[in-house]
Image (cartoon, rainbow, N blue to C red; front, side, top):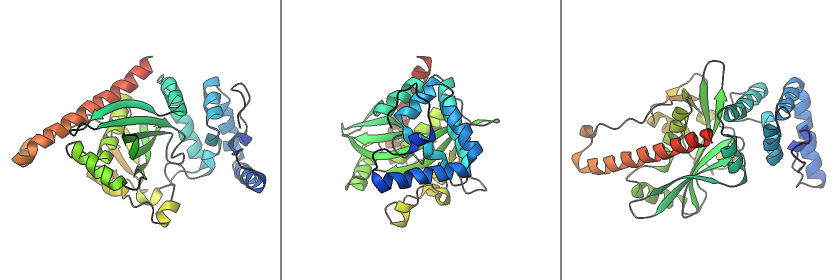
Length: 303
């Protein structure tokens, strides 16, 4: 639906109006049945989107937001009420931190945050996308691209609780190009052995550090919200292996946590001498990328 920003957000915004006939009616009925099962949460949810013109504008531009709380989101550990609070806290956080301009820009088209020059001379870009992709796994997505081809993505959401600020990470996956694996291997060599997924996890960690978040909340394998591609064998990523490589701690509910902290330079004496040069270059690349991403969010919040 495409109402003006000043119109009141209603539950019907969540129905995809590109559907027709029986398909439209089925989606409409499914949404309203789910809302009837959670009347109190639904009332608070719609009231939130109508509480500020800036929030209403976001829901108008991305009507699929309205149905997010009725399906698994970020982690299967969250119920409907928790999902509503998490997403509300995300948009309240970006409002408070002055990031709405950046996020609104990323709603319309990918926003390039930094360029990385590989040792081959190839240019890599890290872009920010808001809410249009991976909609069940986070409100924001960082993407690493090479020559306009997607290599890797990570989806995340800011979470404000009474006790602390967190970043929830709901997805980390490679691109879908036929030669995606070859491109990922090539980019790893080109970035001195820095893997794309390692780069993106560290960049989200640095965003958290910049915005005073205490930790990343990382979804475990069993708590992923999108399972159909896994059942079909289309997604083979082992999230937990990646989280443990980053020294994350396993939580009782099957998810993981990782502190938002400054980058730690490796002890080069523990690295074989013939690999130290590449290790130094790898850390320099990661350090510069982290500094650039932090500056992007700092300048956006100061604008």
